Structure formats: C-alpha cells, structure tokens
Length: 322
Image (tube, rainbow, N blue to C red; front, top):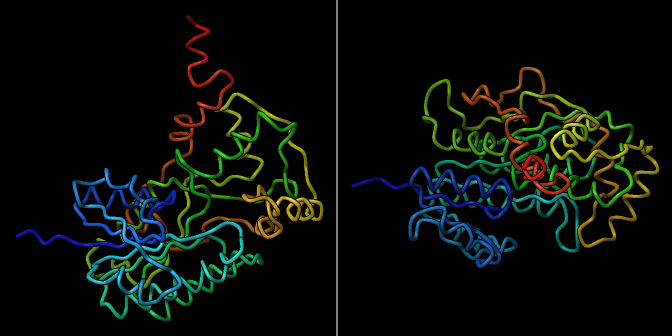
C-alpha cells in the first residue's frame, strides 16, 4: 500500500502558497488548504487529481480550528503574510500570533515537518513589518524548534505583486518614484525557487548533515540590484520607460500616509521605512545553494509575462512585422 503524505497549507491561495500547492500535488501529496473562505481555494483543486486538493475551513483566531486543520498532517507550511495593515489584520496578529498558534498546533498534533515562510532582511530593518516577522520566527522556534524557516527577498513570477504592479502603473502616471534615491539593494528570487526550497525542507532525509529541520534559509536569486535597477529591468521588457524622480525619505513618508488611506495602498509609511534597509542574503547564510537549488535569473522569467505590458500588447512587434 502506498504511504501517502498529507499536508496543510496556510496561505495556500496566495502567490507563493499557490506554487507550493502545485508542487506538493505533483509529488502525490494530499493537501488541505486552510482558509477562512473555502470558496477562495476552489481554483486550486485542478492542481491535483480528484479529491487531492481540498479547501479546509479554518478560523485563524481560534486555536482549536487551527488544530483541526493540522490534525492528521505530516507536513504543514505557513505562507500567511500581509504588506500593509487594515482593521483587524495587524502585523502582530498575522505575522506573529497566527504563526505561533500554527506552530503550537503542529507540536500538539505531532506534525512531522513544519516550514514557516518569513522574509529577508528582517533582523536589520526598523519597520514594524520586519519586527512582526522576526517576532513570528521567534514564536515559531519557541513552539516548534525543529521548524524550517525560509526568508525570501522580493519574489518574482507571473502573478507577482511587484513587477506587475509597477508595470500596470507605468502607463497611467507621469513618473515613477525613486524613494530615497532608489539605492536600496534587493536580491529578487523566483517563486519556483522558493517553492523548491520549501519542498526540500519538507522532503529531505530527517537524518544526517543535510537535515534542514531547525534551520533558517535566506533565499535570493543570482542578481543583486538596486530599486532603480528594478525599474530599468522592467522597462527593458515592457518597452514603456517612464521618468524616474527621486523622492526624499520624509516626503515619501508623507505620501505613504496619504496612500495608506486607500483600500489597497500603493505605499505606506512603514514600507518607506522598510526601504531604508538592504534586502540581500547575508554572508555565510544558509541559502538556495545549501538546499541544492540553482537560483533562477530574472532574465529567464520576466520577458514571458512583462511583455504583455508592451504598448499594443505582447504581439505588437509581430503585428508591425506583418
């Protein structure tokens, strides 16, 4: 009889979570997608065979509901995260309290492997986002010491909320801002590499020097670039350059305060604070390479989805040639 594994994914409907669900399904793992609104996870069911991917109702504010979600699971992955606070969804609740409750449930239910997706650069940053993420890591370690923690830099891929957001903005704004001069450094990582790292942490042998349990991995791609460089790279593939205007930190914070009043803010003061700290893999950190994963360059992925933002669409050049 085949020994099927079962996984529970928190945040499985998000950008990173969706990719992890796809990979787990491809490996024959049965998956519960823990979500407050099961209907929101219906689009994931075709990722596996009939009944392999199941949306599971879960109230994140109820420890018993979380325990029910992880009950009977071999693997648990937490991908829940937010970029800005709204009403009850505070950084503290989403990035610290909920991961702590998930880790406690994993310990109580005897889960074999738990992977917590955090963020890169949070130890050095002075933003509330980073502080809550770091608190979440410490809470996870306290409740489930053998958890694997992965810290990705900016994550790119077809459905990302970074390049897509700025590519959509570019045609309708007179310029794009370079906050603090745009010199903050990043090490963008491909979403497929992040999910591969999670899979390695879940499925590597539990014994020996390569045991990933209880370790923290910093995930970055092969390119270290500034925020200004990211704009230039985007323009290369959208063929729609815009002027870049330096925005001093103080003015950026004022604009962030105004934008934070929007239902989905383009910028918040805390995000401005985050940009004061570089977001790159630290020297001697455990990394994608440690897990045997070759990082993917932006140049091999971005053209495939940013070309749709070219004036006239991705086939504009073909139309002109004909």
